[in-house]
Amino acid sequence: MMKALFKTAAVFSVALLYGCASAPSMEKMQDEVAHYSLPKPVVADKGLVYVVRPSNVGMMVRFNVFLDDKEADSEMGYNRGNQYIYFYVTPGQHVISSKAENWADMPITVKAGEVVYLKQEVEVGVMMARNSLKMLSDVEGRYLVKDAALGTVAKESK
Image (cartoon, rainbow, N blue to C red):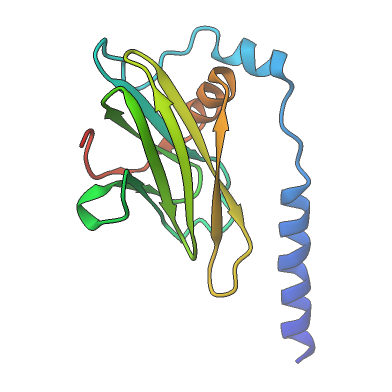
């Protein structure tokens, strides 16, 4: 009993410390991405969406990403810990949905030739990890994509 309690306390301590880590300054991020090229190039007639999950917390739980609805044929791919996916979209309004224990939705408006970055944030859930989506600036998005591995891309466009 005591051993299980100790292990539980250790896991929560690591999670707490992990959550308290601070992000680098904007200047540091700008310096690190100054000469960085994205893995997928922008095309003139489409928008490009990167969805990045920089946290390793709950890394075995996949966060599936959907475009415009929550049907199986709308799944664009999924991320585990410290991964990103990308896909092209037609210019206009879209809804990006991320599925973990919960659904997280983010409405976006994308212009032709524009890159949009979304971050999947990990939250503690009841049965498994929960998630939320956050829009990122160009510098933040490129910085996080640069340090992440490619997730599982189901399709590059819909």
